[in-house]
Amino acid sequence: MHGAGGPFARRVFIEELGLPESCLLRCDPRPDFGKCHPDPNLTYAAALVKKMGLSPDGSADPSVDPSTLPALGAANDGDGDRNLIAGAGCFVTPSDSLAMICDNWEAIPHFAKEGGPRGVARSMPSSAALDVVAEARDIPCFVTPTGWKFFGNLMSSKELFDQTDYTPFLCGEESFGTGSDHVREKDGLWAVLAWMSILMKANENVPEGESLVGVQNIVSNHWEKYGRHFYCRYDYEGVESDSANKVMDLIRDSFVSGDVASAS
Image (cartoon, rainbow, N blue to C red; front, top):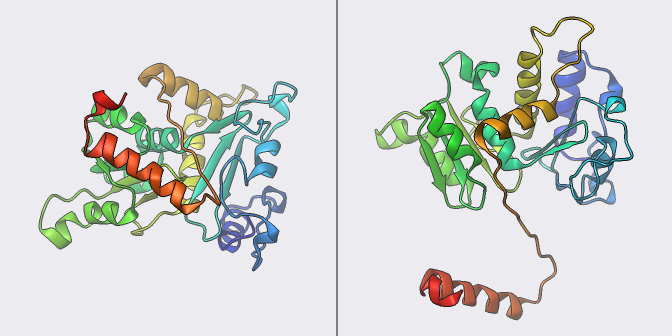
């Protein structure tokens, strides 16, 4: 997205992992983000979405042959802390991505060397996909208000509050943020590396010449095992303040302070 993550992507993917320069897209930082909005979602990462054989709504474009598409596509935002994950003809929602990283922790060195995450958390507006995985894997799971500081409190539970140690820790929010306790913040590049690790692990025993396991296979298998969770996030931009405040007052009066049943 012409943001701060570009040089890190080049250092990790090109210089360290030896991938070709052609795997990078819009990785040169620009003060104006190339006159684009540096948000890694289906709207503003349209070039990547199209390259992965997706329609603007995230569904597979039926006119595109999936075999001609890259195996994995990812976007970071302006400061590199959020991420969008997509496979060939397959968009992975932030909530599903978090749940699938949790379920495949054995593939991720940070978790594997410690026997798995000791705690996971998600922001309240996200789906419950993480909850069912955490229950099945016997991992403590928390639902927090929106704000990374709440995840930080859980990561620092032992050192700051002399409570339970939940590290290594995995967490994520609805706005495409995913992270762990290696830093007390979202890390878009880390999420991409996590998915690369998951794909590598899934394909380690695939015989040469056989079809590789792709993102779509991982997502479909996950839904078959745990069920599929749906949620929507709507972003409203340039809204008139008085009207927006009336909407928030209605929500507070009807669903926070009031009776939900009577407001239906």
